[in-house]
Length: 310
Image 1 (tube, one colour):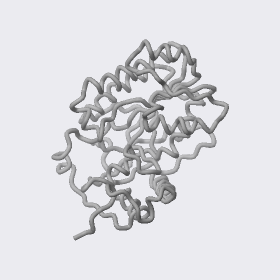
Image 2: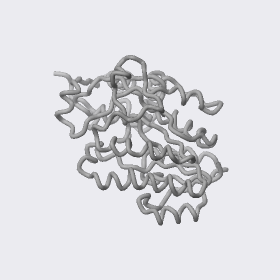
Image 3: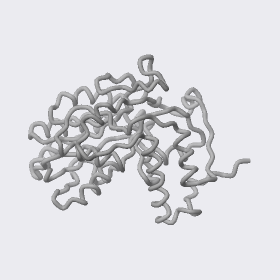
Image 4: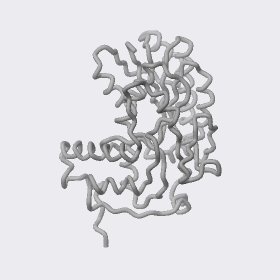
């Protein structure tokens, strides 16, 4: 790995984090893509001009403030999540460039073969069974096609979490909700998993990988850790999936992903913590970060402050 081109590195969350990570290695040239991935000609020119040894593809549309946006912006979602992603994969394949695609594991839902609480996770060989949101539909279309490219490493990221309170963070989202469902899910702790993705790209791994920390954790368990480490006055309430459906446009994916293949193929020296331990460490780092920012111990922005319980 000598030169890396990052799509989604200028304005994207994961792409930006990867750029920061790579900047620590002076032996690797890092380029933040200027081209729009839906424009095949400009994307091809940029690849030919820069001639990267590796491409990291994290550009995509998830919607603002959440995936419900995609329900009303289907052409725009297709243009980036389908056409753009295929452009990058195909153009890199033509040039013999390894590309890592930060995809999603939100293409599954618990079913009879993978019951909630059973510990039986979906494997890389399982076909998507969730199309309850248009966002997930586009991602479900993409995976079988991306698997056809021998140069592609496809990482199924789920409910990504960082050790700050950026708006993209799964923790940030659920902390702001008045009520949450309480279902165990596989999740991805970025500060731990993104270095692993870099090691996988360097090793030339390809194909599909469930890219989450091993195990599952529930919404309540996450918010209890938030209360423990960040705000002891925080409180929350639960509601059912049926009640949730009344206030969202698109259904949400809930699942457990099997990480056997990921752990088996992980390059030497890379350690992946189980999700509950990884979350604990994440909140410990978050507390330090928010203290350094001046948010803690008692200066959290109003959007994170709950009114006292009546």
